[in-house]
Length: 296
Ligand code: NDP
Image (cartoon, rainbow, N blue to C red; front, side, top):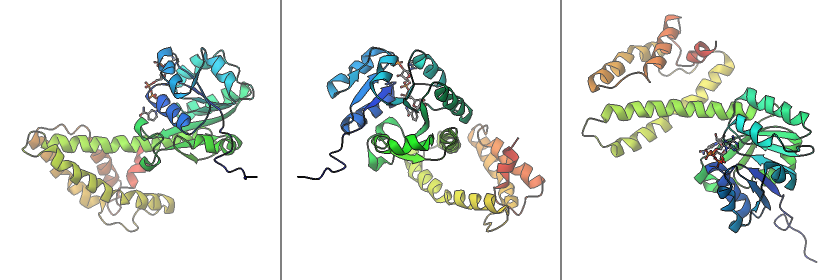
């Protein structure tokens, strides 16, 4: 008799609430991986569109929740979770909340789920919808909260995107998620400023793009050295470009913005923090001291 393989074992049934851009991508990935899937969406047409692909469509959130032990929520925000799950019986359910939230909201939602008899896992999705179900694109989700829930459903959770558990504190997935997103917006801010500088010049954005990309990649090495300095408490170890030198160069950046008719409103706040650290005596450091200035 043939041995059962992992591929042969039955796939965990999943209920998914929320079929926006992200929820629909998740739904299609679970269906493609062979998981029985029950879906609910406030606007019914979006759920109906998944029926031909094999999804069972529930008429209400309560009906969807009742269909599977593993219940995944991918609604717009924390308030919509309240609204959608108000009438659902969560006793003995494994609730996975993929809504982008703050660490505090995630912890409150975990306590809320526990009071209603559910195990809880919070998730922060590090991907955009076209990356879901495409392992080569590197999508993953941070998870935090119930380790038992994570271990039990690791295979199902890992079908649409990689699954990274970051701790029992339900707020940690959101903390990691928002830390990465915040860094991303800092990068977008710098890139917007760079494109604005060339906008009125005969330099094609398409020419600058690969240069920007490779420069940012090269500079990303500083992330690891910043972490080392924060952990050691010595901000002067291994410094290549001193803060004193970098602040001296700020005028060039600001005058160039002025010459090009570009607002420095994205750049100036960061440069001001560098100056403050220099004024406080950090001239021999690199940029790590700015982290401490941000702490309130
Ligand atoms: P969309 O705006 O595409 O979809 C929002 C979903 O929430 C829809 O299903 C909508 O229903 C539902 N919804 C909104 N308000 C309510 C409510 N009050 N009650 C019930 N349902 C409601 O968002 P996404 O799918 O893109 O995002 C979902 C979550 O995933 C968000 O928390 C987002 O931050 C996160 N995420 C999204 C990423 C992305 O690139 N899209 C990336 C990483 C995370 P209806 O169809 O009826 O309007």
